[in-house]
Amino acid sequence: MRIIHCADIHLGSKMSTHFTPTQARERQNELLATFGRMVDYANENNVNVILIAGDLLDTDSGNLRASEYVLSTIRANPSICFLYLVGNHDSNSLILAGDNLPKNLFTFGKKWRSYEFGNVVITGIEIGKNNNIYNSLVLDPNKINIVTLHGQEITGQKKDGEVINIDALKGKNIDYLALGHIHSYKLAPLDNRGVYCYPGCLEGRGFDECGEKGFVLLDITDKIDYTFIPFASREFVEVNVDITDAITYEQIKNKVLSSISGIPKENIMRVYLTGTYTTDTQKYIDTLSTELSHNFYFLQIIDRSTLVLPQKDYSKDISLAGEFVRLVKSSNLPQDAQEQILYYGLQAINGKEVNE
Image (cartoon, rainbow, N blue to C red):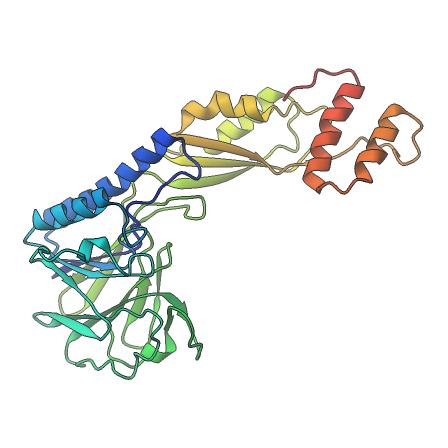
């Protein structure tokens, strides 16, 4: 038997934080398409069950198009059993609002509910604010037991919020604890018998979700083998570029190009300029962003480098530059703002062309 464990797909996300309106619509469509590609993968690889561990939609309503797409996809694949546990984002999912749900779509409720597939039993419950769920979980030790929940993992006795007490699930005859809520892949031992796993989200939606995204494929015979399958159409990638020994614009550009070489163009990129720079450094960020923007679907350059002033005691320097430096340094402006003002101001005072 084969099972896909996925979660936190967040269909219907606005995707407007970083992208242009056109790109946001494209990314919304890509999320839908990736869900469809995952179902195609299931068909091509003899997957029997797709287990969705919460937050299939980004909100309860998501959007009507996303809900209709999911229902249409499920109906078009009757050989696959879809088990859908709602999460904290889609607890009143529009997908489940109708009376005529697909016959191959099954859900979990406020009490433990199990579905049997031969020797494999998949059990789940909607946590909500209810944390008194552990004592009522009873599993047959002679079965292969998969339990699904959606929430933040904790250890100990914290009781408030939508959390999963990992300690309380030890010794419960669980072979695989299929979780949702955390957007990065994580696999860890549960106890001597089983493991727990967050598959992460299917597609990253921001730079807090960098790296490979996908789902977990379970191969079950007399035991469970699990494999993370990277599946996103694009990845969010962050790169640090130290510009300390770069002075000219070309030197900085070449450092950036060297750091991003080999990263696929379809990815969503953020470059951080780090290290130190001086008033002689040709740090033309806007120009660099424009010139390199064709290298990726999306490219953002953020300056985190630190200005190093010339070896000169400006505190006592009787000059326009000295007065300017003292005035800026005595201000209540944030450090990064002070550095930017000093950089451009000293360039102007020294008769250099001020760029950007």
